[in-house]
Image (cartoon, rainbow, N blue to C red; front, side, top):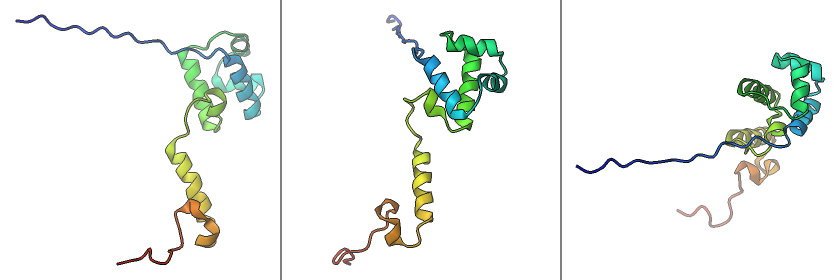
Length: 123
């Protein structure tokens, strides 16, 4: 019998953003929170948050809590600006703008409603 083939995969670890402290400050300001309020919401000490501001990295659990808080407040882009918008967010915004239009002509071409042109309804 032949020899069993082995695969060796090399994975690169995810790089922690070098500007995390600035992103954290941007999130706090956009959320309208004090550092103490942010610490309370994340259930950590104020000292821990100050360490993060000075370059320490939050552990996985705290980072997850922070990202969940940012998502709940609609501010995930302040912490993770490279994340692409979700397709359903784009769809819901366009559907809302179309629903508020009083007529197809006032809704515009964004709603997918076009006036038929001569010859476009051939049978």
